[in-house]
Length: 159
Image (cartoon, rainbow, N blue to C red; front, top):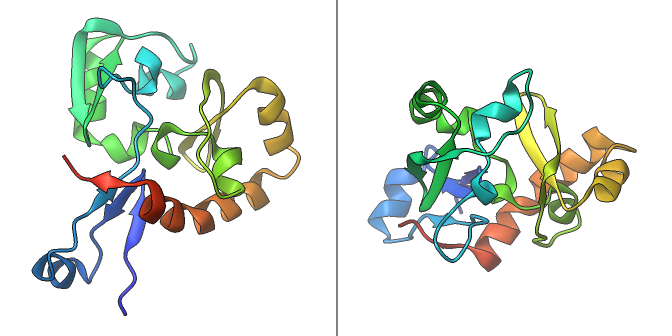
């Protein structure tokens, strides 16, 4: 059986993508968003990578990615995101990295985060972030290992 790669909460296409598509296996997505479809609680995903740290986005500057609407502090940030959403979108569908490392989805505090290996990893709270930081590489490895099963169990077809 072929193995699909899972990135940013979606079943990403790998070498077997054509086979999967031919078998009508839908790609699945897990995205932490509000009932209105707002991702990252309205925070600008690009801002996490800037010196300012996370800031709330402007409701009039938006982009949609894998079924969620992201807000941005500036048109420049939006354009950076649109050009490379995989670089800026939060890992684990915007759910808690520590929760993913334990095999489940957990909500996040958008201000409890870390950037690891160029990846935005959100946490449930600042106290959970402290737990994550006791073994960040081990937790990230475990979260990555658990993510495919979480997507399989919790994911929805791509919009």
